[in-house]
Every structure is written in C-alpha cells, then in structure tokens.
Image 1 (cartoon, one colour):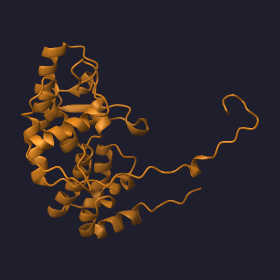
Image 2 (cartoon, helix red, strand yellow):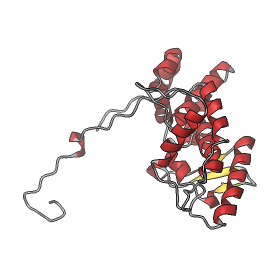
Image 3 (cartoon, helix red, strand yellow):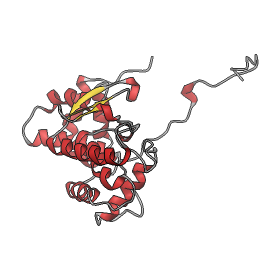
Image 4 (cartoon, helix red, strand yellow):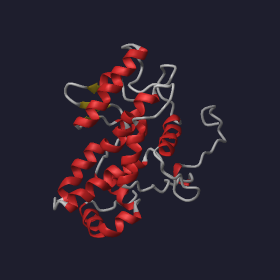
Length: 236
C-alpha cells in the first residue's frame, strides 16, 4: 500500500515486529565431533557429498564458519598454496581472510581435485550439488543427519537436536576453554576470536557463551569481565 502511494497506508514500525527466537545450541562433545568428522570422510553417496562432506563440515568445526559462508565459498576464494580461504561479503557485508590448518588444507585440496574431475574447472561454487549448482540452503542439514547416523551417534528424539551450526558454537567455546586451560589471557584473545569468526565485536562472540548454559556456569567471571569492557548500550 505504501509503494502504491495509498494516502491511508499505515505500516507499523519494526519495533512492533515479533522477534525470531534463536534456537538453543546443542553442545557437541569432543567424542561426537571426532566420530562425526570421521564418518563424514566415509559417506556413501552418488552425489558430490561422498567426497565433499568432510571438507564442508571441517570448515565449520575447525574454522567456525557459518553454514551459508561454506555454501557460498567460491573456487577462487580457496588458496591452496597459501593455505587460506576468503569469506567474501558475509553478514553485514563483512569479508575476511582466514588461515587454515594443515589437515583442513589437505581436505580442501582433495575435495577440489575430485570436484574438478567431475565438473571441470569452472563450477559455480566450491561445494556443489549433483547438478553442479551451488548447494541449496537445506541440504547441509540433511547431510548432517545422515553423517550423524552413520557415525553411530544417537539422534535425540526430543529436546535439543544437533545442527551444522552447532559446530560454530563449539568452535567458539572450545577455543575459550582451551585458552583458559592453558593459562592464556582470554580477554586479550577475544578480539582475535571475534575477527576470525566475522563478528563486529566481542559482544557478539560472547553470545556463544551466553547461549551455552553448561559452559557458562564455569566461566561466569569471564563473561562479567568482558561485559564490563563492552557494556550493554541503551536503545536511542
């Protein structure tokens, strides 16, 4: 009605819109993550997921990428020689270049070689469907459950259920947990973690602690210290 210049049109402001509650994360254990990634490397499928599922989920588990960032990764954004990837035009238009570890780099190289053999050198995305088109938004979740079952892990019938995005949650709190265990100054490292994960600031990174009650119980002091450094701002 507003676009049609209806003089009687009245649209409520965004403050009256119902919010979309974020799902409660499933806290993946070290055992579950290890079994899952092992099973991802042996997935039986006639589709490219047979060789690309391990690389796809390793980027989420080892680099903390968002699901859509992995789906949208272009072939030219993976530098095998430099062992880095470029995440371009992600959330809020931010881009970042990320170094990857040896194991992830090797997995990406093998995946790329297999995909080039099947689809040639000009496929539209690094990870593709059987048709050669980019992976659809819903497919990672479907493949995730298949791999989870193949790993011999029990799928919860009620309550919190694991999702691909839970690897990103695990990446955040696993790094904080490791730094704490090793005696590293976590507050000094949070800004680096925020930059690596593509956050505008550490307040967004701390969401992953807030959203993980089991983890937060042991790190209440860390959260309090961080919030004193980055106080909550009032709405204008």
